[in-house]
Image 1 (tube, rainbow, N blue to C red):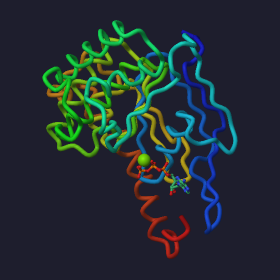
Image 2 (image 1 turned 30 degrees about the horizontal axis):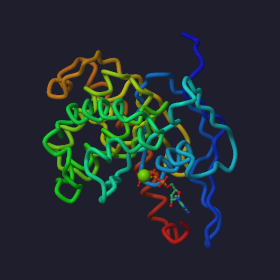
Image 3 (image 1 turned 45 degrees about the vertical axis):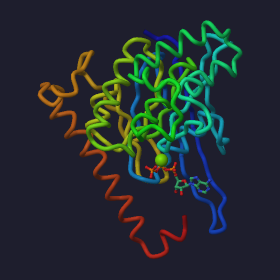
Image 4 (image 1 turned 180 degrees about the vertical axis):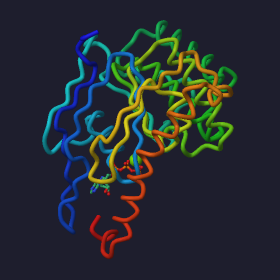
Length: 270
Ligand SMILES: Nc1ncnc2c1ncn2[C@@H]1O[C@H](COP(=O)(O)OP(=O)(O)OP(=O)(O)O)[C@@H](O)[C@H]1O
Ligand SMILES: [Mg+2]
């Protein structure tokens, strides 16, 4: 069990220099994520969750500390990211969007088409394979983003509140779909959410951040067996106690963030 973690963060610090001074977004993050683990990151707004994913995606450089992602296959991309806002290419059809990462890697056409067909089926978008994003609903566009991220077959998958902009019912359906896909291929996932329910439904582990500057406050395993039925998960004997512990840890931080934001000059300082 002492296998090398897939993702290893040590002493990760990120500061932004702004006109108003230095903003510390992350203040010493130590985190290991195992291969195939689904980790949910939860914390108050502004605690650095997006910053952490952006650092992992290579979009920001840390101020201090180290990041290691262990690679199994150098031919595969290191990461794929699904953002909160729709990140599909409006000028490409659904099929081309999903196959984009594979085309960039010059995966042969026949193999690419097979993979794209599989993900089109998994997210229920076969009838829309040749449609353009403007012809799709918001939920469908997010399904395209999710399908593209999985089809790209990265070493790690980074998801930043991917369903936050959707209505409650679509959110549930997409979370179900995500679980089905993930259970079929067990990627290593770092998934940011504000929803405790969503975290318990999806995660192997829930990592709670402190109010800014972000540190890791608590780390809860989710002892609910898979496959999980989102409709029945609330009746699982472990659910209520876990929800309460997560909310207790989180509540203190949300209140701390609120106190901080309420301080005179706090908003301008950021
Ligand atoms: N490019 C930047 N320049 C200056 N400050 C930044 C930059 N990006 C993020 N920050 C600051 O870093 C802190 C963390 O921001 P981040 O977006 O990572 O928070 P978050 O946890 O994702 O919040 P939310 O839950 O609202 O999405 C905030 O104080 C933010 O203002
Ligand atoms: Mg964010």
